[in-house]
Image (cartoon, rainbow, N blue to C red; front, side):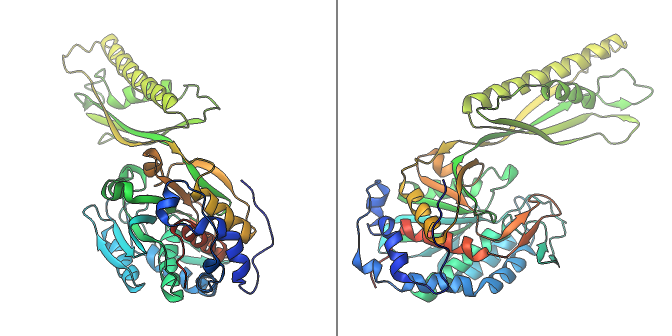
Length: 438
């Protein structure tokens, strides 16, 4: 989708803002949840509080960036988000929210609206892909801030706090109750466990879910990319590289299987991909390993294609094992100790898609139109996968600025223009949460 109008005005004009956002903010959350087109409201058009909140986000850009650096400096490896979570709990509490941490580690800040049962969830994930011991301290160079995780998801977490503060300071009251959540387990083997728990806990009360993830404002993820992550382990007798030569080698067997699998053709449409992202095994160069394992990421726009690809992977890894055993027999290996294969599913991310005429996309379109922003719909794997898979309206969107190198040690963030992403996210949030008359 693409929307361009007049650029952001230097001075906030609430009347223009209200007129554009009018179509998506006036009805109670319960009506929005049913997909009813919102009506007009003179009270909303006369509101100055939203304008004050948006102005504050622009004025505090530098302070928000410094908070982002502090958040990023707290390590949050997979399954080890507690320290960063404790820091976010303090920030959200200071922003006036009622905060608690649930049993899986999600930090949940509640901002009461007129309705206590209609909930809008705004989330930013706590975890990074980087293992414990990674240096996550920031360095600055030519306007950029370099640090692992500085954008994914330091940007989203800093925006989460900034938006809560702006709504508090501007005294904006919403129709729906808003949950500001720093959630766990979005990356990798976390398997979206934080968002799964949130959907399980709040269920049908969740009217809309917005995930703040990274910085990009050129697109919105409104379609969930299905994926499966698997670990394949081969075990064998092991031995000495010279005296036991001929014994079946798990690494050789895995290599044979991988060589087969990576030749698998995948369609351009539905777009499908695979990646062997990790391989481990062995103890020394002169030892036949007793164990070796790989981890594989499979993704597709089609659940059917994803199932086919997983089936091919299983077949090819078994063929690699059979080839290695056959080679061992030809070398004279006669022991009953053979290779065994174990196939473990590490994570399943379901697919889903937001309807083009949904109130959530209408709110985003109105925000883009007012801000003069161009954006398109993309399919990706984010926290939005879980709500979308069960029919809850959800998107994932960037929180402003520019970045590159996500999931690498060279990741960087440039805060230039981040106010666009902050304002875009806030307008979209209020578009579905509804604004109460002053």
